[in-house]
Amino acid sequence: MEERKIIVGFVSLGCPKNLVDSERMLAEIAKAGLLITAEPEGADVVVINTCGFIAPAKAEAIEVIKEAAGWKAGGTVKKIIVAGCLPEREGAALFDETEGVDAVVGLGQRDAIAEIIKKTFYSGERGTYLEKRPEAIVDDRSRLLITPSHWAYLRISEGCDHRCSFCTIPAIRGRLRSKSQEMLIAEAAELAAAGVVELNIIAQDVTGYGRDLNIKNGLAGLLRELEKIEGVKWIRLMYLYPLGITEELLGTIAASRKIVHYLDIPIQHINDEILKAMRRPDTKEQICRLIERLRVVLPDVVLRTTVIVGFPGESEGQFGELVEFIKWARFDALGCFRFYRESGTAAAEMGGQVPDEVKQRRYDELMVAQQQIAFAKNKKRVGSTIDCLVDSVGRKKGGRGRYYGQAPDIDSVCIIQNCRSAAGEFVNAKVVGVKDYDLVVRQI
Image 1: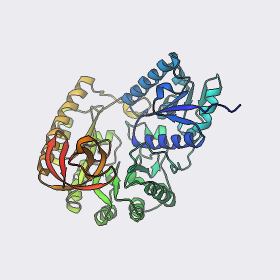
Image 2: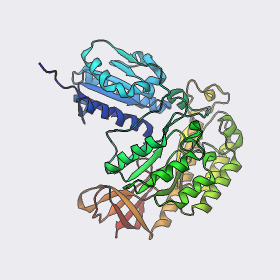
Image 3: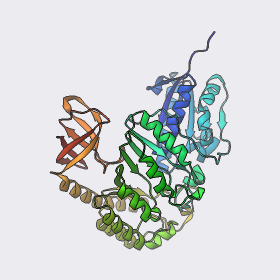
Image 4: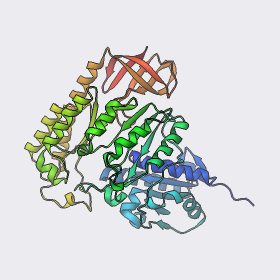
């Protein structure tokens, strides 16, 4: 008698890099003939691809695991598999931290997920798949996209050689391993053939691309090749280290027809003493010069950054310096994290740990300052015309989309009135108003 096909529910948590891993796992699951359901609660096996970067990500993952355990206890789910970054950090200890888990799967076993699902489903034993993470290049071709069909992430490298004192990524993901240009061009062409018009370039450090392969100006060279791919209209750069932004890279962006003038540059802080304690290679002077240079070379550039407040030893004066810098730099978008004391990092053992209530107050103050900047910039766009990529269309001709200055999932959106186009199409629109961080536009 033929075995019944296993029904798999899949939950993807965490950052875009993790999402790419989820898409590869889903492709392997489908290729193995297993059935994928959109309702994990009724699945035979639930796979949870987790993030474990910081405490809130771990807490979210634990909550999802507990929810799945409740389904299992109620008889609607038979097996639970926890995959991704959290098993890489916690290992088999996850069995003790959470009830109901049947297998934990590390990053090195990503492409073996279908066989692990089968083994877990038919076995009554718990399984650990935490073999040493291979230092080989991760091949992300042949993915089952869970982003909208017209945009996707292109991961150009895995791991990171930086040793920021607050960061767990090198311990989880390993050293920098750049994909070959040939592999990336093939992957991008595959995505374009499937209807992707926007490529969002990601890595732990995008500007580090090719450094491990001794390729000079590797990112600029790669971008020039990606631009040649027919069907791709927008290429967006995420996670650029400030010191990796060279004149050649800027020249490549300025000369491009497809690389949008949007740069995501996490700076983390601006005070030189804090930057040194963070083990960041930048200085305040270098960061300020870079921002000034960017706005000369790319006058219409949209800048996003990320900062941390409440780092060990951060004084009121140093925090105030950060706020004043934010007011000077006038970033279009900004993400702010309260410092989390992550085990295994150098910053966790530093003196001068900042109380949680102080971190929260500083977070609130900084985000109010950034909100005022973002709202003022939005108001200045009223009356202008922009090209929008339509992401979704609802009833009554209402749509959602983005202009080049809005990255998917993390930034604001354009609320499109009188939308006559389908998702994945570009429309010319006039900005007629604002709604908090979002722009209200009308298709022309």
